Amino acid sequence: MTGTLLAKKIITRCIQKKITLCGAESCTGGLVSSILTKIPGCSQVFKGSIVSYANAAKIALLGVPETILEHYGAVSEHCAEAMALGAAEKFNADIAFAVTGIAGPEGGSSAKPVGTVWFSLYVQHHILTQGIPRKKTWKCQFTGSRLAIQKQSALELLQALLIIISDE
Image (cartoon, rainbow, N blue to C red; front, top):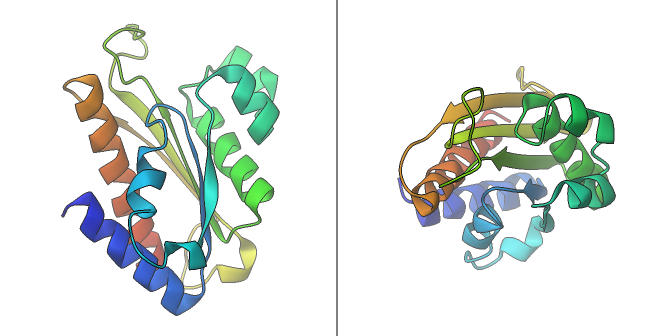
């Protein structure tokens, strides 16, 4: 399914269910938000996002604790969760998404190779039904060019958003 089709389904379901969204993006540089905002009517449910590429921005704009970045790094489960929580608090949205990773072509290591991407979804208590987890965090390993990794990351996140919203 294309990003545009996923986004259309996400926005439509959010409007129907009166669910608001927001995000925090690092390695995708706002690509997820760009795809969502191409859909007419998205302003009814999409509150905004923060592109926090630098660690200083993650700290200042999303409240990611410096200790998380020091101990685990920006490309980690802990950072993705802190980014999603920070976005949820900043925008007061029902569901917040976060993505952080290494799109390359440089910057990888043996522990975190290029293409390592962490995702997190944070769901506010008042919309928790049918066993939806309060937070969901996962890692993917993508391959290809920088742009290919960014696109794969955006599609992965949009698919996860659609699943969470459909289960709601």
